[in-house]
Length: 146
Image 1 (cartoon, rainbow, N blue to C red):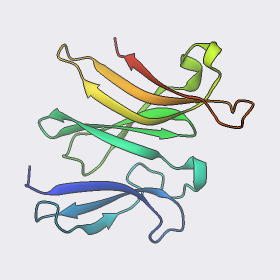
Image 2 (tube, helix red, strand yellow):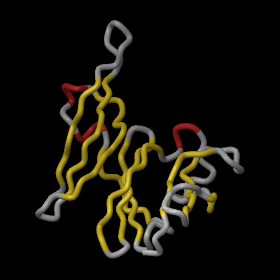
Image 3 (cartoon, rainbow, N blue to C red):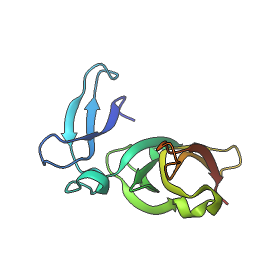
Image 4 (cartoon, rainbow, N blue to C red):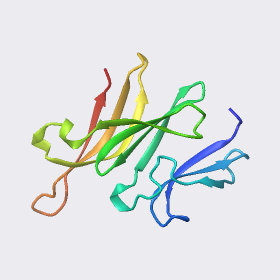
């Protein structure tokens, strides 16, 4: 709403642990200034305990839904203040939510879209345990909210 651009990224700037950080641009995204870390409350997280692969979706009126993953499970957060702060909504998908025939170990790269009827659809990369060649099979899955 202030014609700025928010950049959320994974970083290890000051605290010594990976976490989601926020930078802000007042010139349309040409330059950014670090604002703060630990946006999702993960400022002390290290390695697999940090939220990663974050994507954001505009809900209108300064509201944003952020979808991210941690330890192979997908979570959402909501912002009511144009991306300044985020409130944890909860876990929305885990590998166990899909057919056991796939033997998924992790869900990665979540991407959420808003459907015309107001529901959400999320796409994820599901990764199975490694096969006999040591290469983990990957699949694209989607799920739709009620």
